[in-house]
Length: 332
Image 1 (cartoon, helix red, strand yellow):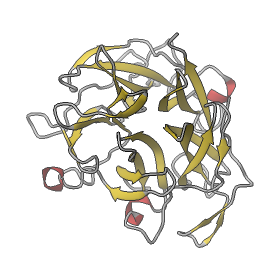
Image 2 (tube, one colour; image 1 turned 60 degrees about the vertical axis):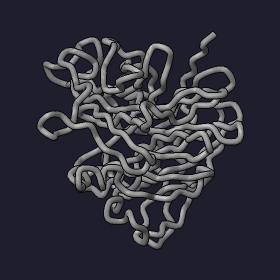
Image 3 (cartoon, helix red, strand yellow; image 1 turned 30 degrees about the vertical axis):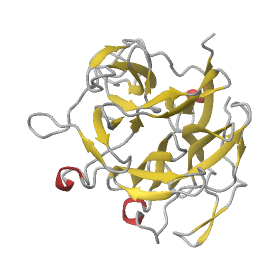
């Protein structure tokens, strides 16, 4: 670790600026991960050097593959990026495409949920692909639900529910629908019949149903941001998420102020909106120097990719908004 770092020699002709760009010169972080052709593919967020400060540069999604899950070869060009000529330009220009999560249907369709950032409003976007290289953008997953009520609200970080079948991790259906958790300041649940159009669950007032929220005095006292695709286990649905510790009196004094650590919530398989249990302590915290330096020196292990590969689970995460690393869990 780190397994992916910035590369000032990587140049891409930007269709938005009509000029060559060193598109991953400054930072590479917050990776999705999946399997294709017996290889691990990591789709990571990369920032150019067009500005200084978090959220002010342009982000694009890069592609890297590995035979062993540990050593990666980067493609050299992004596979998802803002383009002034496509249907997502208004939502992705000039900030770009950020923080992907990706998973696969049983018939091999890859679905990516990512953040569209125009530097005014962050909102979720959906894209699909058969090869992880050529992507079709579908816009906001909430564009049609409730007459478009939530089409333009702030939304980030979506985790589609998956299951293990025949040794592969694939998108699951529960009660005839697809399900996903999403959110940053809280976690909501949404359902779909086509993986493109999603309907968030609402409360009695017609507002987003908040199935979990930040907790005063805990590592997730400021934010609860969904991580990699959730997965059905024999005990329930595990949602891995990123908790941000509050820097004030509401924070957990055992962890650095404003740091990001990783937690887990267990939901019911029959009612994915029902919480069964939740970790009070993070299972993963920033410890290494490269997890506590760079753009986010408070410390960040930001988890977004989790894949089963050769009998183990590989967790891919962003380090301080600056690098990509991996941790391995061996069930044996």
